[in-house]
Each structure stands twice: as structure tokens, then as C-alpha cells.
Image 1: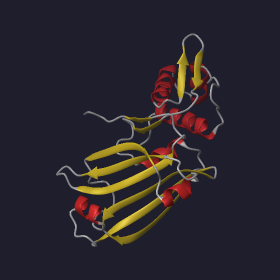
Image 2: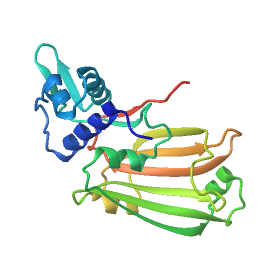
Image 3: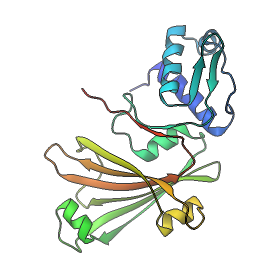
Length: 221
């Protein structure tokens, strides 16, 4: 399905802001100029600006215009992208040259994983490590686990997420280039089916200072 024009325009500006092409406090072109550049109405551009504001990327100053925010937020879930994975969110908001690498293997389930998935301890589960860098700078790393009979999150009806500051695992700390004792932001995810079965769990780590805040927006209908 083709993205709405305002989502596409907002995505373009989000990427330019993340990349640094539009640094903090720089003023965006006027609504009229953006509308002319993209061949859309000012109403469409206004919706794009509102989406950027909701993501914490820009701020509107009455009678002056729209300016890039000092430090962006990470909006994890928006109405336009329900059930989007954390890695996909970062990719969309990062530089167009953002790189993703993924490696997977079968590992024996720990006691905690066995309880979550309803398996026997030691039964094999899939472990996937995903790394994302932006212009050569590491921006996220995740550890994901799921039973072997689960291939994706298409069966999930609910996504639970919790955010906390914590010390990274050695693997996450090494990738994010943290110094000993530094905390990172961790998004802990659980994908759950309508009948209550947990089909996937994931821990996604980000540098603690990459975002000013994490914003969660879920559709209620």
C-alpha cells in the first residue's frame, strides 16, 4: 500500500534531521514552499508538520515558523505503522544509508524463555541478533528469541513494550561502544497472540543519549 503523501513528506524531513542535514534550531521552509516542492496542498504539508511535531523532531513558533528541535524523540508506534518492529522504526528515521545486519542460530531455551514460550528447558529456540548503524555509527542492537514454529509476528495481536535504563550486556555494550558503567536505553518487547500465547520476545538497546524521550502511541480502535 502506498504511503499517504504527508507520511512520505514527514519521513523525508525526519531522515534529513536524523542525518544532520537539518541541524537543531534550523528553520524549515514555509508550508507554501514545501507544498510547491512536493506538488501537494498546504493541508497535506500541515499534516506532515504535525506528524513531525508528534515525533518531537520539530517545534512550531507562532508567527515565526517551524524549527528543528534541539534533540529528537523516538516515536515507536504511530497510527500509520502499527506493529512496526523497533529496528524498522530506527531505519525509517535514520539516514537512507542506514545498514542492518542480522545473524541467527538455534539455541537451547533457558528456564525463563521456556516459561515464557511454554516449552521444556533446553528445547531449541531461534535466537536472532540484529545490528543497525547509521553512517558507520552504531545506533541499535537487539536480541530476539522465538519458538521454531514461529517465523514472524503476523499471528501477534498485541505488542507489549517496556523501556528502562540499564547496564548493557557485553554484546550490546561492545556494539554501542559504551564505556564501562554507562547505561543504555532498552526496549523490552513481547509479541502476544489473541489467545495469550507469547510468540516472540526481544531486547532492543540504544545509546542512552540518542533520544530525548521515547513516545509510545497505540491505536485504541
